[in-house]
Amino acid sequence: MEGLYTATPTATSQPITEIPLLILVGVTGVGKSTTVEALESAGMSFALLPNRRTLTDEFIIRYLQEQNGETVAPVKDRAQRFNFTRAYRRQHPGGMAHVLSRLHIEPTALGDNLLLFDGLRGENEVQHAAELLPRAKFLVLTASDFTRIQRLLGRSDSFDQIAMSGAMTLQLDPAIQALLSEAEQQALTNWVMAGDVDIDAVNAKCQIVAKERNNYDPDAALAKLQSTAPERTIHADTEALNPAQIADLVLSHF
Image (cartoon, rainbow, N blue to C red; front, side, top):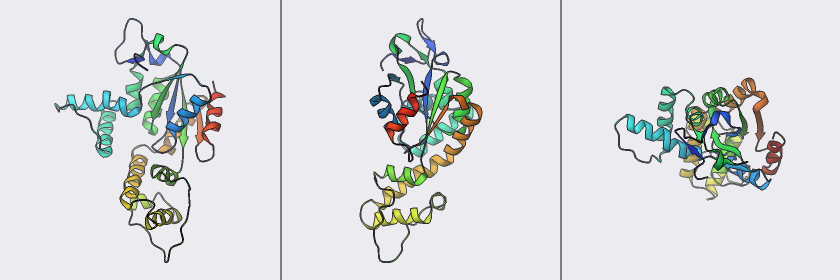
């Protein structure tokens, strides 16, 4: 929404710390975008802040590039972006939560809408967000690592097994193998052998999931919010609940 936020206060703006806010918490593939669509379909009136990627570009990567005397330029590689966000957290504990807490909102642009942000990740970010944003509620979305990989690959069926002559397994990185059961690894193999997905795509998506779990442990994030801000935390397992059910759950808290 144009004119909704600013990084510096104006004569009419309010600190985001004073405004009710719904924050989606979850890593890639848990269903955040689908949930936002479901909330809209359910009739929730909200103003959506720029997403995590946009704020990372605008406030984290730009800030560090300027600080390091580098040319300000887009960074698309996920591994490089992780390095930037990690470096920012070393300077500003809370990372994206720190960025979010420093924003100012224009009331006329917000109107009667609920402010919504997609989203935060990991124990460090949510811990600081719970402290820095006292009026925020948190919608924590979770899904298994295999389901996340499956969604990133565009698969619609969890274990659409295909009969093969002899068992095969992909040569996955040990860190990735540790995330998946033998049956899940075999499902990935079956999809590749059937030509349904490309092996490079499988490895790339698995790397994303493994890297995110290493940087933003979703289980630790949920546990932290449930212990520090239980009355402001809503948890939805996106494998157990469909988008409409999640939307109803959220609406019941407002």
